[in-house]
Figure 1: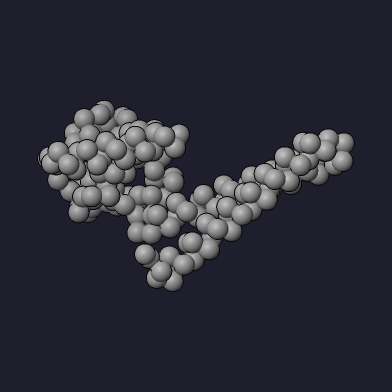
Figure 2: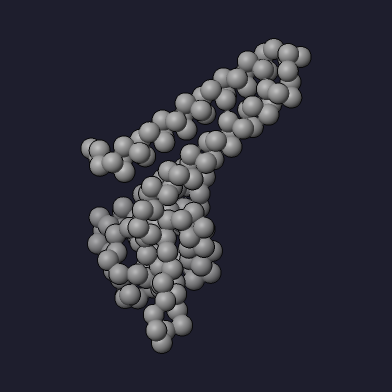
Length: 157
């Protein structure tokens, strides 16, 4: 819960690289930095402390913490007598992230099927691409589901 969190250079580099990794996935760099920081700290952090540590505005932290909160990666906690909210990595956050990815992949399966049904036999090349899309995303969703199940069963390495 400290607001005076100083990161060692190696840790700061990890946090920055998490930001870049998130940015490469199309998510805000600050959200990645925020998640990276919360992954390594032992205590829940308030917005002020996060903003100070990451050297970004409190408004930016607020926006990005809401984003990763909605993604299910962090949880918000309160303390009696303290009006501030504190954030920490949610237990099972990574499993939840995979679940969201599986759900998103299933949306593409449904979209591809919708396209297949819509074009029928009128556009054979388009239909072929849509069938490939559906089958690819089905393969990916099944594979992610299998990997997630293996992880839960304890096959972690």
